[in-house]
Image 1 (tube, rainbow, N blue to C red):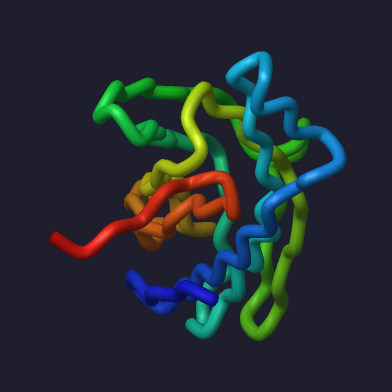
Image 2 (tube, rainbow, N blue to C red):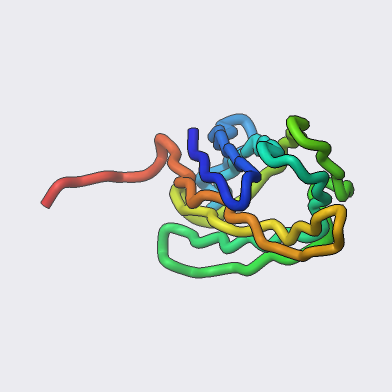
Amino acid sequence: MYQTTTENIKVTVQPHFLEGQTKPEEGRYVWAYTVTVENLGSETVTLLTRHWIITDGLGRRQDVRGDGVVGEQPTLQPGQRFQYTSGCPLGTPSGMMVGSYGMVSAAGRPFDVAIPAFSLDSPHDQHSVN
């Protein structure tokens, strides 16, 4: 599990390798990741945008930007949390993701919240020492 807190917004990510959707012979490796966004502050906030940086095992980078998450722009009252699950396919058996959410406070103040870097590991990756 990976987590970070920015401006009283805690983001926790738990990635899961999806063996059943993975096809190594086709160069397709798939993960799901569950994200929990929790408002630890005293102000209502809304998640407006997302920005993901996805890097595969060969260092190839893909930037993904969009509105909200899983078709929603959740508003979180103090103490509330929002959880969703999404997925990521890669052409290599490992990689990593990191990103940020664009948020706005009820008072109209925009701010960014970090999504912690997390690794996408599979049993198909060959690890060696030396």
